[in-house]
Image 1 (cartoon, rainbow, N blue to C red):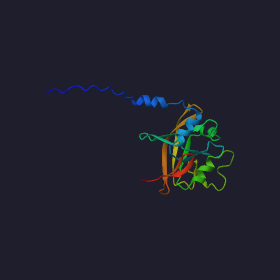
Image 2 (tube, one colour):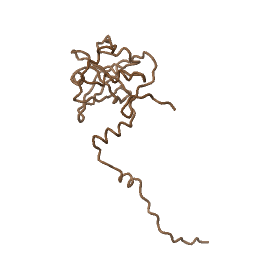
Image 3 (cartoon, helix red, strand yellow):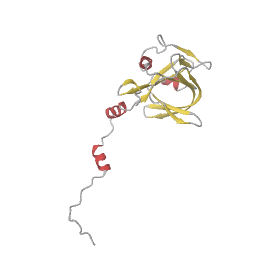
Image 4 (cartoon, rainbow, N blue to C red):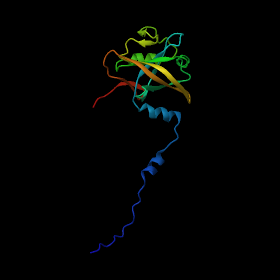
Length: 184
């Protein structure tokens, strides 16, 4: 037995990409900032010394790149006060911060101050790099590459050593402020 065809008008199906395209906007500096404010990122302080005294800066751009060899990358603005040192240093220390260390992150994100003056507690590793005494863990890394990318440099570093002082909950940066990770 055959089923008679129904005379119904065809439904207009709007493909997903058409709805997405209707909402697309050019990425301005304000949109760029707004989008990435919603992206939580881990917070570290990167320290270095190329022979003229220690420098350090707060970074949320740390990324693991490769397991073999162990490589990470981070970005630093060409206008950053730490860039002249990072541009010539052979190594850096990546100081991981715990959830309660937003004051340290804020200090190393502030321009025009001596970031290594009190209350910052720091010392030099046997290899000469500055490391934060209160960082719960840190990685020492040899700089392998520096790539100019827009108004930043992307720095690739090969991990040399790791020191774990204590377990910790990570400090995050989200929506323009420091935050703790919320476990579900």
